[in-house]
Length: 32
Image: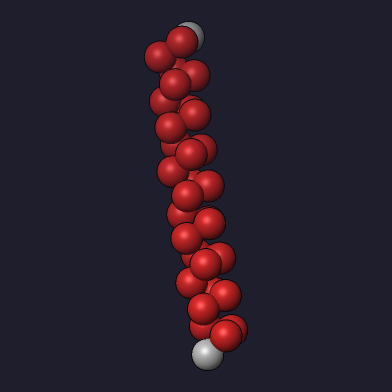
């Protein structure tokens, strides 16, 4: 069970990073 919980946390972190990356690229596009 602990492994599954850790996996879920990891997925949340990865998704958050992906979203942040997308937002960053969008912001850069707006600035440029």
